[in-house]
Amino acid sequence: MVFSSAVFVFAFLPIVLIGYYVVQSRYRNALLLVASLLFYAYGEPKFVFVMLASILFNYGFALLIDYSNNRRVRKLVLWCAVLVNLGLLFEYKYFGFAQNILNKVLGGMVFSWPVPELPIGISFFTFQALSYVLDVYFGRAAVQKNPFHVALYISFFPQLVAGPIVRYNTIAEQIQNRTVTLEKFSDGVHRFILGFAKKVIIANNVAIVAQEAFATGQNHSFLMFWLGAIAFTLQIFFDFSGYSDMAIGLGKMFGFTFEENFNYPYISGSITEFWRRWHMSLSQWFRDYVYIPLGGSRVGLLRNIGNLFVVWLLTGIWHGANYTFIAWGLLQFAVQLLEKFLIRPQKCRLALIRWGWRVVTILVIIAGWVIFNSASLTEAKQYLSAMCGRGVTVWVDAQALHLCWEYGVYLLLGIVFSTPIAPVVGKKFRSLLRSEDTFYYLRSGGELFLFCWAVSFVLLGSYNPFIYFNF
Image 1 (tube, rainbow, N blue to C red):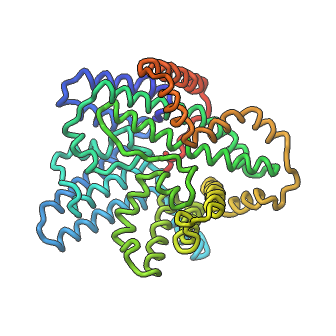
Image 2: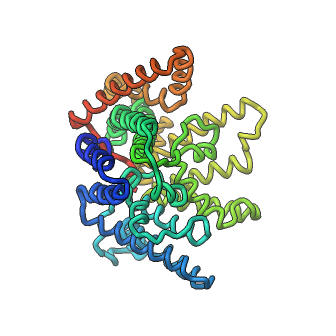
Image 3: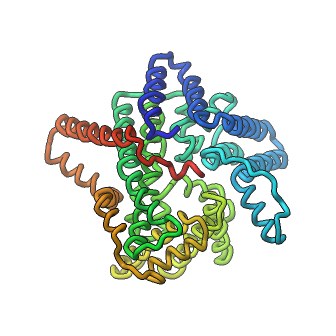
């Protein structure tokens, strides 16, 4: 079930909200847990047992760590937790990839074991569960002895299958004690509608352009290749940030406050800044559980470079079992090395270099998304070469012009709203009105229009995937 589907918007969410506010407060967590399991079971019920196994194991590991006073025993349990969680990821996400690599190395189909289907959002709920055990081990969070609270933390449907990756110590108190005010609920509805509109109106429409351009076996024009790269750059941002907005909004409707996951990443002046603004919960996860434990930047030069290499290699692998994701991660690593040790754009006093590197940054981001979206490194190389004009015989074709005419408004909306222009204009407009009531009614009317516009696409059955469901 996806947030931008009719069954979620008009059936699942209203029923859960009504039930949540009708039942007594002591039963609300139980209702949310049941709803979350039903949400995940929709479509593929068998994978609920995979998530339940993850919950059970990590609940037990945390209890054992808290119970023992022996440092060696605690460390042994921690390593067992790490191995079980990563083993679960490997089994469902990387087993087939590893098997193919072994067959290539050995020169034949030596291994042909069946590859299991991929449970939706397994990387998200596995990282979330593992962070709980790690925080208990390092004393950053108190162990939770109620298994249903741990289950709700890991399975809570707003952030279950595509994040943000929520840390247990940020919502532990909220699970047990929380209140919902009319203002908070209203903010949640506001945030959900904005995310819903970003996903359905912008992401889904620019996705059609990207899909056409990345279609294999087609000879496109130079304009078409660039159009597709820009379209996918916008698609992945509005797809993922729209989902995060909806998740944050849904959380507020039920009294939870989640941390932000995006902060206008495409206005970044460097790749380092980009990763402080893009998928912030994942960046913070790798920083706190991989980079800093390895020594971070408090070590020698070569060791620091090695730490960065490990983090970005794992970041690429986390996103998927394909060489393209590894290459994408290593691209981030290579550019950050240039920034950290050579260019240093944030400290440079020359405006020309800072703005020049800002252009380089967005080009690197676009090139990275081309690699990310390609089925193989060969296809990525061919696509990037075509963007540079190599092998392209036609600069503009009818297909590119048709897509510009048909979807140009959505591309333009995507470019505009990927910058903080809207909140700046909104703030200025609000100050000019000098009336909070008037601003509230105008904003509500605008959001109602966006919601109806987005719903019309949903009811018409338009293209409606979620990119990060595969991770």
